[in-house]
Amino acid sequence: MSSDFEGYEQDFAVLTAEITSKIGRVPKLSPDEKKQMVANVEKQLEEAKELLEQMDLEVREIPSQSRGMYTSRMRSYKQEMGKLETDFKRSRIAYSDEVRNELLGDDGNSSENQLIKLREERAHLLDNTERLERSSRRLEAGYQIAVETEQIGQEMLENLSHDREKIQRARERLRETDANLGKSSRILTGMLRRNFTCPTISAN
Image (cartoon, rainbow, N blue to C red; front, side):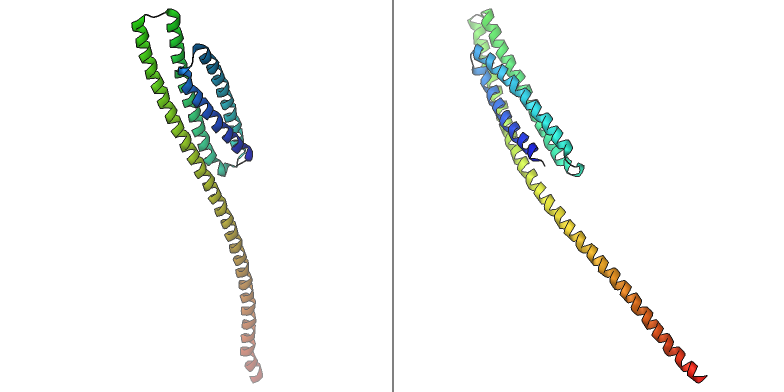
């Protein structure tokens, strides 16, 4: 795997962690702060998409026999990206509802209901944040396993290469032995023929 791919992976992990944190903070901010935060998250989501595109290009450069592992990891990163976008949309909906209620000037009862709704949405977002954090930890563990698997695979390939060289040398020695045995066999056959023919010639 190229060092560029590893660098993109690290950048993606850091960036998605920042986005997750900001999404969880959106409902707790004032309207102006929320507007600024939403714009910031939108920008970071675009950066994350660009990183995924760069990682896709790197994966395409990897030999086909080693590409499967990285394709699976890319699939996980894209799923994580989809979850982030879904959570961000939900966060923006909560943000828009609050602004609309402030502009309409709801009465006390409606405000209380809206407050309950906002609390429920905050709890939902916090739950999503926890799930994303768990997913991030699983991805990190999967990444470590993938690195270890790659190292084991390289060692196995090296061992197979050494074994193949040994087998080739053994085959060459076997061919040489066969050739020597053939020569010896011909020499012995010639000697036996001479031993059998010599007495007959003497008798005549």
